[in-house]
Amino acid sequence: MHRAARYLLVASALAGVAGALLLFSTFRDPCGGLLRRYVATYDAAKAPCHADADCVFDPLPPGGPGLCDRARAASSARAPFEAVEARWTARGCPAPGAACPPIAGARCQQGRCVTALAR
Image (cartoon, rainbow, N blue to C red; front, side, top):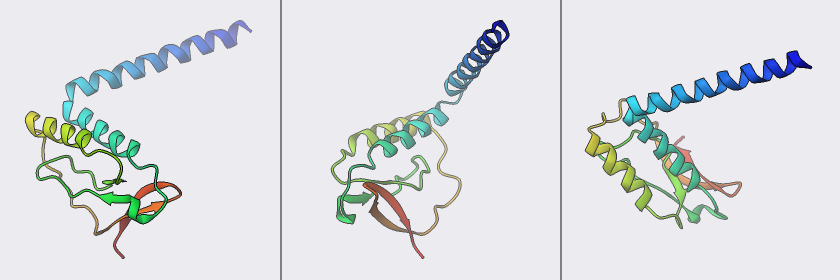
């Protein structure tokens, strides 16, 4: 029993150290932190939808975060995305390095908006 408790304590400490390293690496790389926030904001805005018409696909902002998956529910506000894009530009973060694949738009799939790739 003591061995299991010791193992759990060591595993918890290692997880805490790993979390701290990830947190501090975000401080050293503010652009990476902004990109993660941008992805999370889009992920949260993908639902709900019932039909393809409930979804929109945002154009790639000039010089903004290079996120290809920009489908969101039409009912979600655009302001949170614009805030991250403005901080991205203000910090001088690099423009996207790779082009997105051909995208046909957005559609509703299982209650969430998804990016539809062109065939």
